[in-house]
Image 1 (cartoon, rainbow, N blue to C red):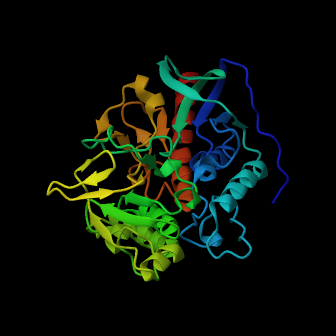
Image 2 (cartoon, one colour):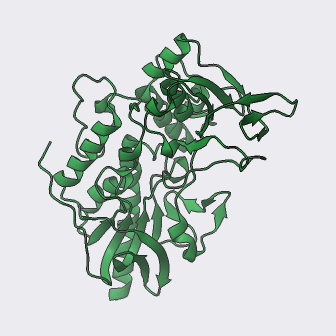
Length: 371
């Protein structure tokens, strides 16, 4: 991979740009790749100390669902990882770091964006490094910084350890303990598989987990998502896409957990006690730790001053463009901002469409203002 250069760490306040991208993870870098081909003046603001986005914070045993060649950002295939069919999170961090350098993307870090305000013809991005005025903003902050944990009776009474997916790194800390893992998705299954090698684990889900066939990996999932999108555009009834196959990809560690007999889910408990979990029928289970693998919400607190209309938990959008603030695009948060947009390969496809739309907007506005 190419030699690294340091990212910019400070900026002059009150600078003016055509586009400010908030977030320097995979979606922000994909946006940067396409923006650099437009001739627009842009900057990427990232609140991390170093490149890699959320990938640098994932648990140690995490693997991609697909081989490297099926997980590229636009313009450059991810190099394979020697000795690994499915790359580690560490390998993805190295790839994102080199990608940023390869395309000389103008990433400024660490810059913490606090709020975005309407300021006449500008959107004013207020940050720890001053104000960045933009003709348009792409928000690509992802979900990792907004973990979701349900609230249950007795949660404050419990004296054991409570963690979320964002807090988990490796199983060694739980050796010999009794651990409850909560959640019915991939994170829960993989973390359960990891911890069950050293601890007595109990898996709890709100509904029975749905396992995908053993031969389904990220390649199949992306092909199915592509077919679903093509069918949607053709007006064909939705068949459910990848979700119709199940919720949990049977990566090697999860298959191993199944073979060891630990991949058995129990119903969700109703409350917590001082020493564990409890059901309404009086059944209790003591445990030393609870790991909440209960998902995330879009990290969008910085957009609150814009007063964006909501569709449930997310802003109203048409594609990636905000309906209430057309100068704002939201990128990489999930299917509501473009199918498979929260994946490495999906981020590139969605970013291309978003940048094309945004560029047309800016050029049209510039033409109107010059006449």
